Amino acid sequence: MANRESRTAWVSVGALGAALSVIAGAFGAHALADRLDARALALWETAARYLMYGGLGLIGLGLAQTHRAHRFYRPAGISLGLGAVVFSGTLFALALGAPRFLGAITPLGGAGMILGLVLFALAAGAASIR
Image 1: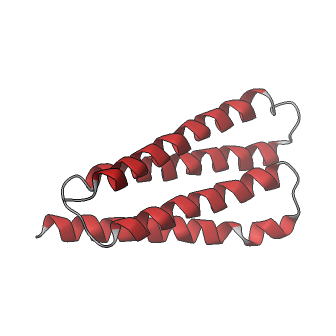
Image 2: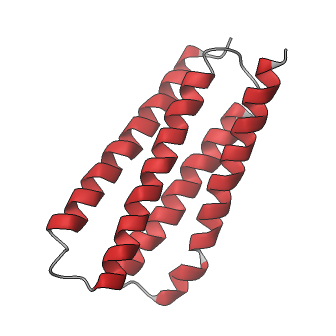
């Protein structure tokens, strides 16, 4: 069985990410609605949504570890969490007018999220067939 602290950490980090997503979404809808153009608001909304996806993924990862430990859970969590931060963080920054070169970094965050979810799937699948 997976280490209890590890499970709890992923759930906690995921819940924090999800909470930050809700805060960011509300901030965008209320405080930024009159200050940003439609394109910037769409970027902001996408960033908040994908931060939520990352948070929910980490919560799921932590809960999945209650069944059985697998060596891919830790790299999955790191990849998913960092990917969500990079993806959403660069989009938040772009929405607020950061230099456009950050747009070249955004896909790296998306790739990190995808890798994290694939590793999560492998770990969950391997754990279920043991």
